[in-house]
Image (cartoon, rainbow, N blue to C red):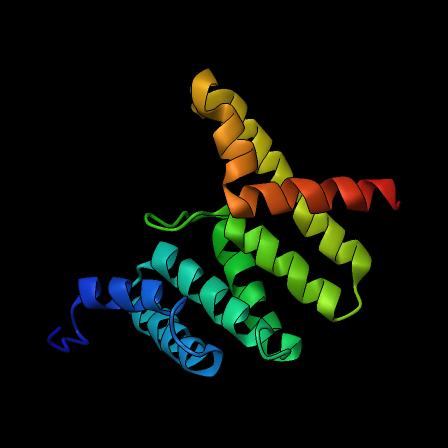
Length: 155
């Protein structure tokens, strides 16, 4: 692959590659991507970059480093939606960050928000024959639903 760092498609591929890279390298790539696309006002992609950077920071146990990325993504989600990113990952990662920081109520809030989005989307946009797959076979959706239910049971 030719390195074309000023190409948005190269940046998008880099975002997907963060799942395959060692966490510290993935965090650096995602952080760089979020800054690059933010400067070009591609804010949906910036949201995805911040979420991936936070997820990578969590892998080595650095939730304090992950939190600013989560905060940036939560700010962006109020008005933006990523094109090529599963939005519930934002609430899943945000909850994980808060849980790692000992903020159980904040974690539960993020998981409940994500679970509500997943359930609403399944009911309004997913054909009936695919709802079970959307709810249970998508790993992020299933984790959100499970953690939101567990948090509700522990309240």
